[in-house]
Image (cartoon, rainbow, N blue to C red; front, top):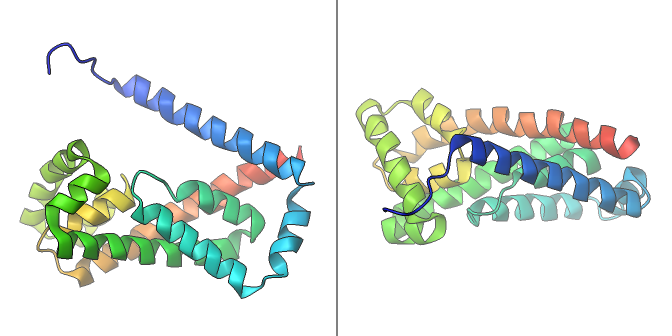
Length: 195
């Protein structure tokens, strides 16, 4: 529309960086206030598998509520559960949450997806998925999912792509995206808390 300012790539990158810095600052402050990582890990350990299940459902829920992002939970999970366990739990959460998104899109249609993720997001994804419809490529889905797994999963539910192909692409993207957040993101958080 005329008169509306255009969001530049630079302002988006700056906004994303501010969110990341804010997240890490808040996480460091909270973890230090709680006495460091070890006391929180000990507290979670007393709940055993129930703490794992809560983490999985919170992470999956953050993907289903598309404006939220599971990435911050993955980073904290890597710090609190250990990177290897958090990786497994986060991959399970990603597969669960994104599969729910796919089926919500498939069963409830464009109207629900637009309400959940926004009309502008759906329009942008429509352009990418015109190419996808032509290719039906698992590799192409894998690449597109790196943009935003939660929103892409909703949008893929609107296509005729079989769930099997979606699940294969999602599995591969979950390993790469979750691995990035767990091993790099929580590594940085561990380093910052340890300072």
